[in-house]
Figure 1 (cartoon, rainbow, N blue to C red):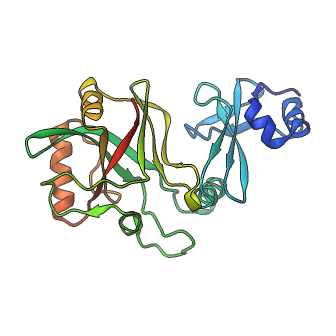
Figure 2: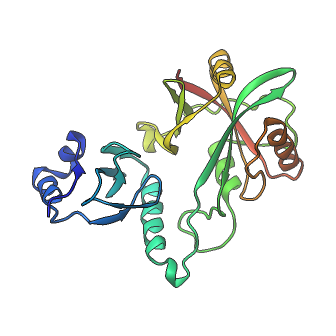
Figure 3: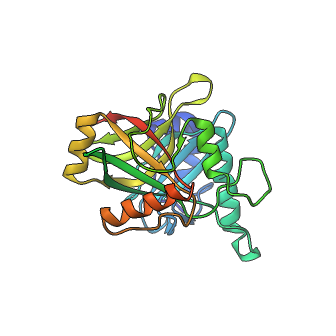
Length: 257
């Protein structure tokens, strides 16, 4: 039975006309699926569905999303991220067997006052411990992994952290789209974090980002910050995480407007 699938020219070019046509006729497309963006169920027989091709250095994975969540597209990711996504899909299938939860990065935007000046900030906190890729241990290596990438450990928020070159924050049409990290072997930047849907930021946040041309990114392990409804409470949580040795930060150049 034909599916209500969108296959973009970019995806078709990657998978070939034959495979694209098999998808559209329903031969290779699932009826029901979990949306790769919002993670809720979808049905390609009942609603418009986007094909999303994740391409790593050696592997490619075809996923499906509600057309209202994501357009059909090719997304370049690191091989590490792709293997993580595959493990995540497998974990979803194995949840009934007690598989561990796959961590998702939660991102909150806010203005942070440093030395009398407001700076645009993103606070990143995973929903579960982050293990080192390839390890079978249960240690949370989120902060050590970021420190290895160049993030600075903080004991207090007294000055602006140093710039981490090669990373950037992608802002387009006044909305937050992604945090980008350097690609493998000096290749194109890839998304370290990508919004399921572009995140709205306040006028004040956007003005501060345009003024400084950089965004401060603070990261803390699961359970350190939480969802804070106000910026003063967010700052309190950041200060507490720093005092407890559970905060790293970097200033990332602004990409876009």
